[in-house]
Image (cartoon, rainbow over all chains, first blue to last red; front, side, top):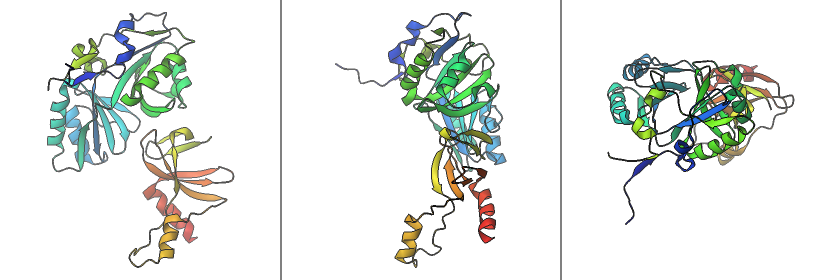
Length: 226
Length: 98
């Protein structure tokens, strides 16, 4: 009897990254791994409107980022997308709670928040040659990407948002539907460099890594209980 | 290949990130009910094919996904500037009056 129960799985499940993951060490020039199954909320509304900006801040605990930047808060990482759109990266388990909070905060305003978790995933890319790898993949001047910036650009034939949270590495927010292509492209581009699927750093108080649900990170699949 | 400045992102990026979105500021007939077939056809299908300075729309497809206007020289590829649709309209109207 086939199992028709819905389940949650990473778009890179067939690469079986957990089996390939090794501890990070300094001999690796490029390290990559996936941050699977985070929650993504698209927020639409004119950001120049003070009432909308205040509502977003009250829900996320983060200030509305300036163009091309991101900010961090209790809810997670708030990424600027366009003058009327933001992307909130949050814990998967907190999605319903966040969406309800947005709905309440946006009452009477011309703004809304939508769950986009089914459409996106996140990769971590670090190591001494990670900028070289990005330059192989896209046309943007990645050397100029400073800490605090979030740049949406072309990566190969797909698009992606590159977030720099620290000097040592970046995070790529990519479409789930292009995850397979981008992962294969990344592996190919990394051939000349010492590449490893490295264990992600200890989450601690890291704004993005702390959002990872440990339960989700271990098995590639998880039944949907809700 | 050239670079374009996106007024929404406030950044200058490679052409690869943008999509061309045609001629800018094509005026819709003010009263469509009374427009003749010829007028309506011109509005829908006829486009300028200028050699020289040209107002055109570009969309920042890989970035903010917004459409904006660029004044570009179609022969030399020189770019006079880029504006949001609303800001550019004032420049465009001033220029077409002159």
